[in-house]
Amino acid sequence: MTVQATFAATVVDEWVRAGVTDAVLAPGSRSTPLALALHARADVRVHVHLDERSAGFYALGLGLATGNPAIVLTTSGTAAVELHPAVVEAHHAHVPLLACTADRPPELHDVGASQAIDQVHLFGRAVRWFVQPGVPDDASRGAWRSLAARAVAEARGAGGAPGPVHLNLAFREPLVGEPDALPPARPGGGPWHTVERAEPGALDVSDRVAGRRGVVVAGADAPTPPVVHGIAEALAWPLVADARSGCRVPARTTVGAFDALLRSPEFAAEHRPEVVLRLGAPLTSRVLNEWLAASGADQVLVHPRHAWLDPDRTAATVTASVTVARPVPSPPGWLDRWMEAERLAQATIASVLDAHTEPTEPGVARALLDLLPSEATLMVSSSMPVRDLEWYAPPREGVRVVANRGASGIDGVVSTALGLAAGTPGRRTFALLGDLAFLHDAGGLVAAGRRDVDCTFVVVDNDGGGIFSFLPQADALPAARFEQLFGMPHGADLAAIARAHGVAVSQPGTAAEVGPAVVEAVAAGGVRMVHVRTDRAANVRVHDELHEAVVASLP
Image (tube, rainbow, N blue to C red; front, side, top):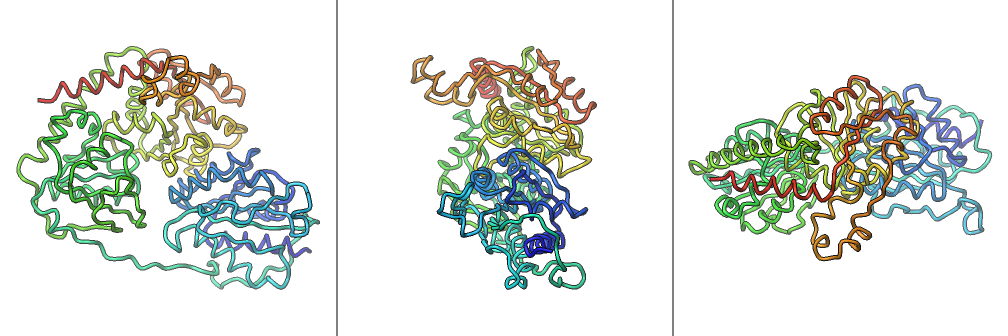
């Protein structure tokens, strides 16, 4: 019997009582006591990853899927540092996460001991709570359950928004032992602490919006679709929504082609709003965000956790929720003009893309969302995939769309998608990503075939950083210098990399072959990849063609 084993068994028991179901482990010696305690519980699913960075994002995906914190456990030293990207994303995206880093005991610090680094506040301000209880001893036994329960409560947002918690846990050798009797727990099977938060009342904006020309903008963390659509319908306002909001569904007020429409100077000027309700996180469209910033409208920012998501500093009011108790519709014709423009834009986008026999990046995004089965989950990478989906995909129901847009990086996408799949068994998971995002996290495919998950990766490969071709650098620099510094052609064989990890790959060569390739992957099940090759220069031309065609279609 050892105190360390008893401590580890106690905190795991408390986490289970609090509803934690999943733990992601990266092999290491110093983390042995907690690894053994997690493995001993039949009610905890243990996922083992060789690479700590992938483990962190896999745990992030589990948190995204379930809304419940997953445990990620590493040994000490640089292994702990590898969790930092996932912790940062969890912080900014408000995803609950329990980051457990094993540590050396105090006597092994600052004396040159192996894998002994300063892990105190390793992740800085990116965590909701940091705790370092020290090497377990009998004197601290009475605090163990409280510590574990508080960690879960803090990760779920006890002090505000959900996010990561860092537990830095020092252990001494011997690291293998058997637990003694655990400290008494709360009767009834519940955790040591629970947190009850009173919901504040909603801000009534009836007087500010009555009879005015307005727009509802819905991003991730917006209120539920019925609430959002109810406001838009009652006010007769267009609803501009990204797919992550859950509100981008076919409805009388939904505008999906807003980015292309607002590229028309005439349309943008004639449809300038007087009031804007911004619900949740900002959308990716720079055109939309600049139009809103320049509109001079009275803007109300609504986020359930009071997140200050106002990069242009135009929100007159920031609040957690709103209501319109006495709705007065907008002037006649306001919504009708928006919806007629939406109809023309969607028809034009479909016509332009249908005319291309070769795969196009907007076409892949549009087709993928259209053919996904009901109740599917789609993980979309930052950079161009999330923009192509936001700008060109038509509204549809029945698909949950998520993306790592907290810090908006392209790392960890493969592992996050696999974590999402593991967290939603029975629900098909897909990931749309570019070649650089795939290469950043190709190691996440290690042992993917043995994880009993269904996940189809659709990888758009333009041999480099396609988004940079849309920036001023592409025209300002000589072609060779631009390619070296920004285009970054890698020449890697992505299909061979996937196959080396045991992942089956299909490679459609035409636009018409993309859909059947995805359908075939879905039917086969498991982890599969659809590899679509495109050209960066041609991709810029297709985007320009789409925007010009939509502008030309407007009366």
